[in-house]
Image (cartoon, rainbow, N blue to C red; front, side, top):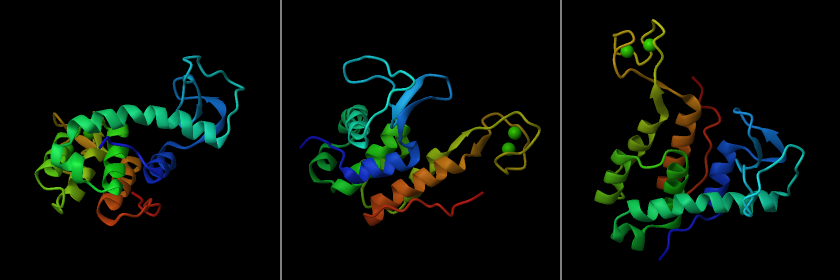
Length: 179
Ligand SMILES: [Ca+2]
Ligand SMILES: [Ca+2]
């Protein structure tokens, strides 16, 4: 059985990626439309001023998700590929779309997909390299040490939402989760 995203995965990623029906320049100035689409399926680039419908945005985004589907197909054990519930597939697809391969998470999922520590494993992927800013960003008492990380709250919310879907089969966006 091939790995395929359902509407739940679409909803989850759209919530965190946003959806614009009129083309806009992304942070790097690249014209972007819908849910992070920069090239149409015919390979023509998106131009500022272009508009689309929600159905088009979804269809283009589903093509982008295909890449995550193909990756997850490789990451999951055969047993998981054959038996895993769709909502868990959706949660992992959202993760792979945003992060790619997460070794700690995938190892746990493939060892025992019901292991409760998988929730915490999702949350590991919400930290980025900290700045050399004279501050102790990870609270370990050492300022600007080698390998210091800091929490990104947007990513923490996203990982919480994925873990929530994985364990509870429902969408919860953790809007109240603040610094
Ligand atoms: Ca530190
Ligand atoms: Ca620092």
